[in-house]
Image (cartoon, rainbow, N blue to C red; front, side, top):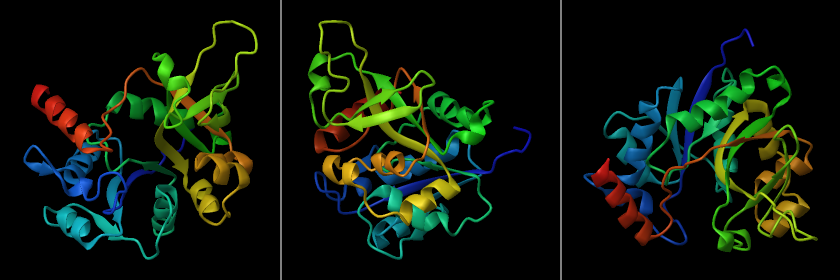
Length: 248
């Protein structure tokens, strides 16, 4: 591509998390989780802008208190993509929007660079969004419904996502299983289309929002990475993140 793409990071940030209420305002070291996520996104130096999108006055004030950028959602949203899509309509000149998870404070620049490079490849114009995946090494994760699996074609485009074991090995053989990692880079029009498309049958059955893109005919390019950051879903995860912070 000759044109330099304008890329921003949007960080969806709900206060009322089901498994760990208020986790984004929990302290990780001397800073809140959401502040560390914001500062990490700025520090990778890949984005033209970084903005937290939230439904919480508390989170909004936390980010703006140190000069960070934040905006309030105008509506209630069932998923992070919807929250980001609403915000995307306020950025008409942006080409690519990266969804940075509000509970992953240790972003890896190398993984994000690989994700964004998809749009500069020879066939990059045909890609609506890109996401990350990782080989599953632990057998118990294959049948764990909390681990979303993805099947890809020979060009690393997503064919299907599921909480079930996919592909199913009909005959004994070596099968490579991939875990979907929920970091996305969207073309702006793709996520706005998502926002204005009703929930689709597979998405409703599996509760996996990226199925809405596939069912709507969008092309998702998957990028394999070897390592990922630490997600904070539970109080125990926060303890592990504290250990990681102390070491690094």
